[in-house]
Length: 413
Image (cartoon, rainbow, N blue to C red):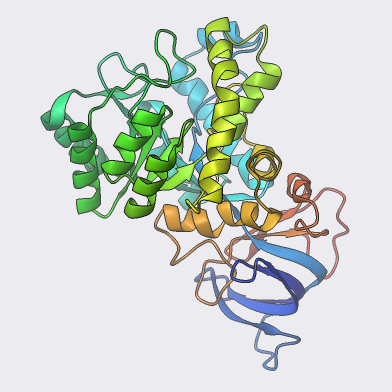
């Protein structure tokens, strides 16, 4: 057992939506949990090591509730032909390992993966747990569920009707997934469908929710158009992904059901900014048609008090695994009317609650897992600070420090 005490830390607390200055906290690196926290200097010096953070800012590690870890965000560029010619499973496995490294280097310490061909996120999770690869902790979904010929059918599981959905979810749980992902509507990156295209019906969604919740697992739902978002919320899903169109009735349903929204704003914005000439016109046109409505929808939902959990849809065109998680938070400030503190909460305590892991993650508190990031400057004054290089800790152990950071007082890895 090794106990490390970190002193002179400004610690973010979501209850106050502010940093508490001059704090210390102690981590047992064997259990990976915080054992003590307080103001000033610790009175008991029973730690094996003391690290002075020199009044830097400590936040819970960034959590991303919507990733596709085996996807290749540069697939749509000129590299597409070479990527397509390679063995798909091998290529996606290689990129998954690279994407995991990029995420942890950028302060993302926990992800929920919501769809992976070949169920690749399951072995990726195992490898990360066994320290065979670096990366965030992983909540898995395996292959997403879709109707025959529906959104994501090329890499997902096609089911039709309540009986097929019930059996499919049971089989996914048997394979070891942590979450069930459903494609309730059409989307942007498939031709011949729209975000308003309803695919799974209410009975099918309820069957999935029933089976998942029976095993204490969560359900995430791709739902973009208004009717699909309503259907998913009524059926009792835990999170609605994207939510392009939310009206007052939808907000009332979500409040009653306790539904979280995972906005994935950068998935749209990245295509809007960089997709011309590489992303097909049919996809770019859908983005142009829906992006303003999408951003207004998230702003409306957030203002109405619907809990927002940060997710990027990492792996879609030009929407990768590096600083994009922090940039998503900036979009919440710039485009959805949130304060920097509210944006930080979406990627910490809100994510932990949405994913049902708040007993372990999402805040710096006694008993919680010591996954955290350290920045030299205060992100409450400028949320873009979180996009800069920063120190990253998992279980109280440094796994990445800024390249230009002076390694002293044990701060460096």
